[in-house]
Image 1 (cartoon, rainbow, N blue to C red):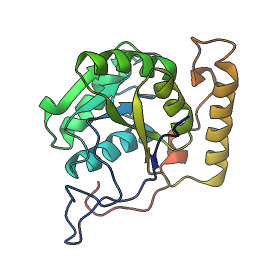
Image 2: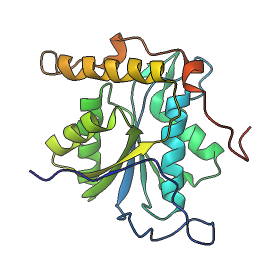
Image 3: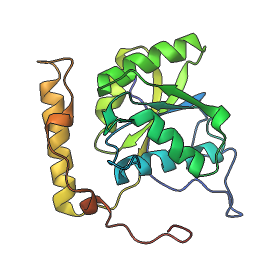
Image 4: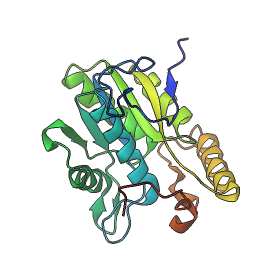
Length: 207
């Protein structure tokens, strides 16, 4: 069994300070797959989802991939995850032509299955999966089960210990439930309040 490569949430920059088209420790992939999660009632991505999109944007700008799949068909207040992700991608000033939308999946298993179908149709064989660190191991297992060669890219987060414990416990519940109810998801377990995930050091250039 080949274990997928997992890249931690580190900045991808050239010695000059600009983006590097060929990071020395980062293998290019044919596409990035960004996994969806909760969307706010106003249609904006939650902090977790925003970090996933912005991690993908960083990798895209660094030349790690030329295509990005926004995966998520679940609706929150009438707004589909994939559509909210695309809007934020465009708000970052990135090219819409690089984006493919996967609008059918409702679970992590569904993300993998629906994306695998899309990727095979487009002739893509190697991808990078972008999601939160606690979610990444389970996500990669599902993509591997679908025959997709995938590396993992974790989105950065600076969370209080209590919030991290909550999220890892939530993920453990999802892992235990999946074999018993394959169509289930972790959405039945409450997420921590969004403000609990916003305790990040300020970054220059961000509002």
